[in-house]
Length: 258
Length: 157
Image (cartoon, rainbow over all chains, first blue to last red; front, side, top):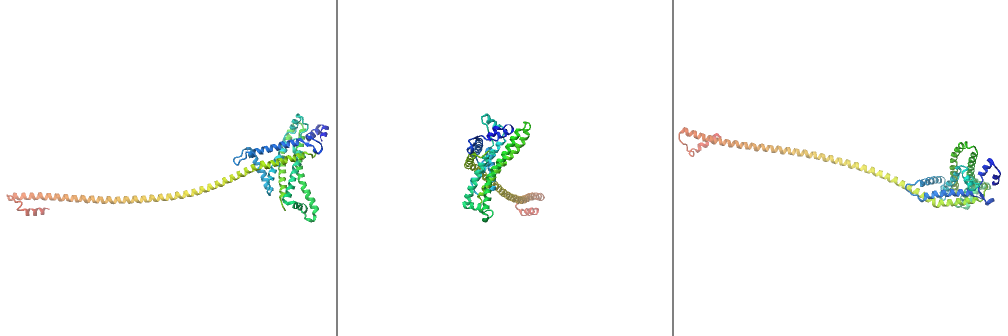
């Protein structure tokens, strides 16, 4: 894609330029530095904020930071309690991490599309994609991790044989074993794919629309980008929420023994 | 746009973040939340208990007040009764005293009357004697006519 960007000029060139990652390496071992950098920075931001709240946590009157952190904790805890009935120390912190991290990723979308790449270009960085959730690597990394946890807990709770039985004998009984297996495999594999693609698709489309708006004359831009940004606040929160809730639900399903 | 090693890097970052959250962020914040919940529910329970106790105390106070009122009215009644008694008694004594004083005065009057009578009698006797002396022209021996004289004076009395 990088070569295309060099070749194309005008509107297409602008769009492709915005959607090209800063990459080092070739082939599979290439690394998208911008995705790694921004997600790491945002992750650190999340950890720093919550660590600060956790260090000062008191049962007395909470401060502003603690109040906000507790609000999120309560919110996540409610979601976990609603859809997950087993006992697992990991689920709630996992859900919190997913929600906050994905939200922060998505939030990068609300920065004006040109500002960070402009700063980057001044520093000699040619390509910069600031929204990690518009990179399939980021969304798939998260959904595959969740998928691994689903498989891990399915085997841990139901036992290897129990999990295998569930794959083979449900939902139609032992006589339709191959069909069951196929159905179940598709069902399981659809989980990480749908998780990753849903988030990616929403944010990629959102980013693309911001880029398209940026191509219009400057006096039209605010009229379009302002309502879209407002609408986008809803989308980014919703996508973070959906990712979190589906993770909880999937892990809840993994914990349910039939 | 293609999948590459970034995926692995992101997974490692994600794992680290989840681990950190699980270890250092979730427990203290969640514990403080739970603790506050407990504190608040304890406080509410205490408040409820306090209110109940207040109600009880109020009831008790009302009872005490009622009792005190009854007692005081009883005391007032008693005092009134006692006062009436005292008034009655003093009336009695006054009456008796008055009667006694009247009796004493009457006795005194009687005595004085007797004295006056006696004095008069004596004077009359003396006058009668002198009149008799003048009539008779001679001295009447008092001793000789003592009988007559006393008879006369007795008749005068």
